[in-house]
Image: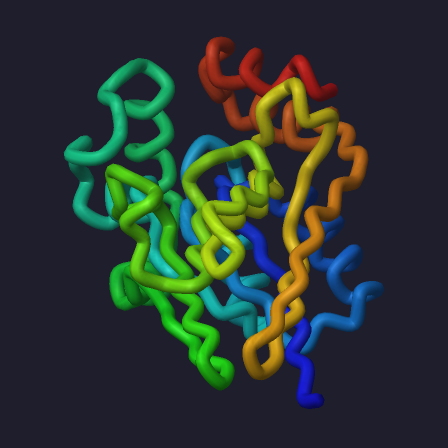
Length: 220
């Protein structure tokens, strides 16, 4: 039985330190490929470093809503508020032309087939009613909470959570490992503790707004 082991990450949000920790965790799991489900940039202070890391490590990414906001310099899909106004402007200014071009050319979704098993990777769940999903497995970013939602014996929605800016209740950064073969899959959520003192220090040195820094302080 040919088995493919896929590492799944999402919502990095320009946090290089967390990305490196999660990458090391997935390497120990011996994954054969890593997919990133978008929101590569935004919030954090390291957009170029994160994009360069993804490109250097051959991580396969799709475009998230925050990536689109930065690329297009608009707020069609994210809230226009103090944090996002600063973050979109900072990220656009900070990104090299090459990396901005790279982000702008990312696909919005990816699909894989393993025998009769159909898998779609997206940033945000496109289905209003989960019972209507067409794929056997829908793999979503966007939500910062990891989960594995069994819709039926044949269908499920899986989410890796955030490896850059998780919600407080998760207790650390997270990712997923999806093992697939012909008509078979297994999914595990992985978590690791992360101390956000480094990224907080960087944001303070770069004069980020206190309201944005404080959104990370709860993890420091």
